[in-house]
Length: 175
Image (cartoon, rainbow, N blue to C red; front, side, top):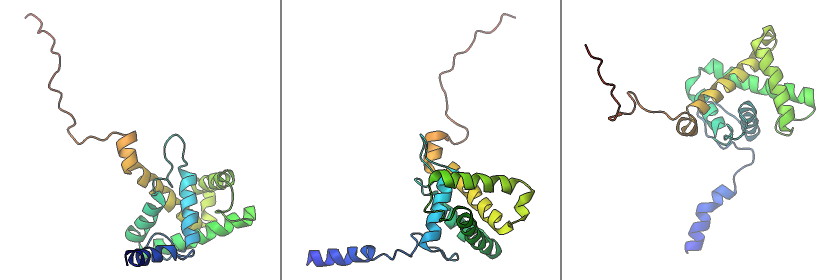
């Protein structure tokens, strides 16, 4: 009986649709491929070095949740349009999807997009640049406010800080 009940509890996770995203959102409708693309983009923006990368910290989920909860309907539409434009532009230039290519190819493409977003060429594809800017801004924000960053990189102490009771006092000068 316990075996049957245990397998009934585990069965739904085994039948997970490959096309369904991991993150559940209220307003954005994304599929698993789009979720993977944003995860790879987030990791490309902040890759793993001697510190954990953005994907390892789950920053992609933070990006989706922030855009779903905090952005306007118009901004969410721009995000989805920009996501599609980003994927199509990458495929056009590299003959493969962003998810299939190497980290080096991703970095080269993202570097070009980053430079274009800072120049006048950002007007060429506003939706894609808006998408990239949203993802980059939320990635940096999510990383710098993550538990890892606040406890391991920047040890945050509440104001006014530590009380140091022992402090050497110099002798007063003679008057």
